[in-house]
Length: 145
Image 1 (spheres, rainbow, N blue to C red):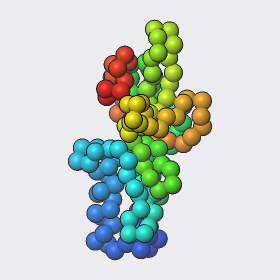
Image 2: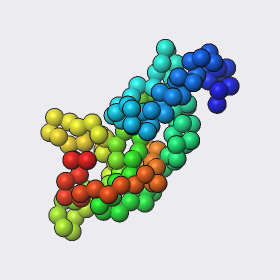
Image 3: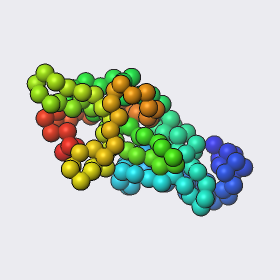
Image 4: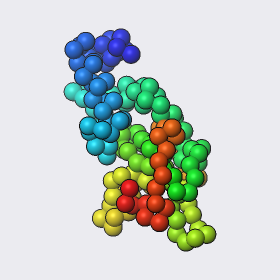
């Protein structure tokens, strides 16, 4: 990867480690809050490097419908669009005891407090999800996660 960063992206050896570390921090969400991140750095699109780092951290390119998640669970996932990475969760939203829908919802909320970006299980939009990081959640209060 370093060769790609240095030769393909024009970064110096000093910069490439910092860039990869910063992208890893976004993915892990421990030091940097996972919300919405611009993948442009000094005029360069870091999307290819970010997707490589996602894979290195256990994330796979998939769709909401293909992710194995049960009601009461959530799986972390990133949506990448036009050089921006949006973080969110794949989960089941419960409307009534018998009516559920599976979706990816961004952690960014709109003015009504709902997910600003939503991807239903029926849409074939590519996301990067990590099923090994699946967590339990309160299905009755999904916005609270």
